[in-house]
Length: 169
Image (cartoon, rainbow, N blue to C red; front, side, top):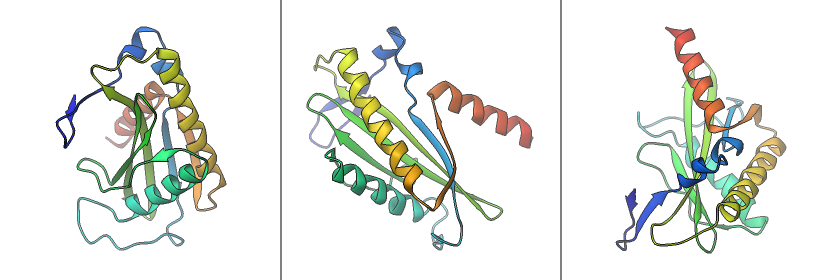
């Protein structure tokens, strides 16, 4: 649950889990970016300036496709974030950037949030969320700087994270 600036109460939409939709939606993107093409200097240890740059590229292309997209801002636990607004809910997207031995690894994670008092059908949420994820996938596939793109469900992304963590230890 989170609180907006105007006192609005939002919650992450978890009732999709009850109908088995959350795991069916591919809502996570993992990819690498060529270092030489988008190389930016990291001035702060917490936020990579590449996050807002990539987030802005994705957001602008979503706007061009007719989505209502909020401004891209640096996040608190991520490098950048933005929202795609629908009449009764919002699809949140956060982007994190990790630099490891000459490789820039990026993750885009998405989920739905809504006002607690709003009633939204699971089908409507799933359709909106899926349309945003399909559009993000196409945007990333068409970007010549993006390599090794993987489009995953939340469970697949969690398993990939655990596999990588076990492999490195």
